[in-house]
Length: 419
Ligand SMILES: Nc1ncnc2c1ncn2[C@@H]1O[C@H](COP(=O)(O)OP(=O)(O)OP(=O)(O)O)[C@@H](O)[C@H]1O
Ligand SMILES: [Mg+2]
Image 1 (cartoon, rainbow, N blue to C red):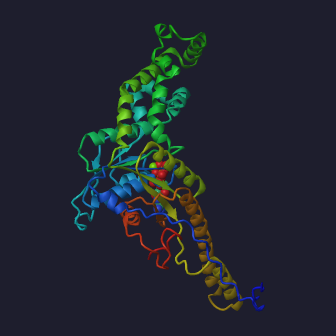
Image 2 (image 1 turned 60 degrees about the vertical axis):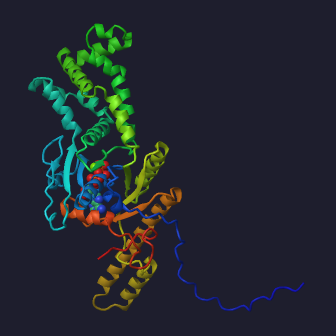
């Protein structure tokens, strides 16, 4: 047996710059086709707090209207300036037509209508409607009422579901785009009907709804004591007012269980799509992961993940290391403009590092959910608060999703900024 010839020891060639290992490639998401498809009747935007659900909903709704559809967007607590640009200046539970300047120029025959849900004001209005102004004021300022109303977690989600059911039943809309509330957890939206049901069935609520002796017939001694204390602290009148408020709430939600079940079923019907929104941050993507798993467990259709507010570098051709190195060299060489050039190179290096971190998080998500389509939307220079901003965001969401100018697939390295 002859030994394999050993290669001559040679000088090691200079190491080529390390290429990032290819990560998983997420399937592309074609939101343009999705919103234009007449079969698409409901799009629900969900995700963790502050990631851009309201903005994404409004941008998709505008894009769909400009594609010729009759759209209503149900927004929840939109930022004031966005609300203003959608013509939503006062609480109004009915959709209002949004005037789209330049709509004619795009040849669109569609319509955009918008409405918003504002639960705090809805609750306060119920209180006002069920007592005198003076007593209403007392209730609103009462810490007990405030604590009680904050324990209505899920009410807003429930109301959004309820409203969605109504909008769908009216058959007036080609497409309904639903924003979801700023929940602690994105899953709250799906859990709301159940939570509401547990809440209204809760002992304390039943107690509050029937503060008379008869109502306490079956109450335990502990609850009798509790009610006496509550009534002592609040005063009998206030307790009666709060009871009236809770009873009004019960009337408002009467039959809610059946309707909630119907709406829940609506969300599973063909024609409904969920769009999960996240920013390239660990918490938001973790939340998106939970949501994706939950949707698949519930058999609810997922359009994909919108990775919003990403920070693509101006070009991916110059690596962070090389940019930092070049900054050093420029400074060493000196001369006019050296400092400025070095600063620009360093900014680029930081941007590349940020993009790499964001890409790493996106890759982790795609490794865990290889089947989920992903669309990235770069952070705009400022807030998105007017129709022009929404239109640009819509273009990012629905425009062509090809390779980046560097030839790297868009879903691999966060795309270079388009000029
Ligand atoms: N791509 C973007 N570029 C720049 N700013 C953005 C982008 N997307 C959203 N924003 C801004 O981020 C802020 C939060 O967005 P938005 O209100 O849509 O989030 P949200 O998920 O609805 O929040 P909440 O959970 O509080 O309801 C807004 O000021 C919005 O203008
Ligand atoms: Mg919002």
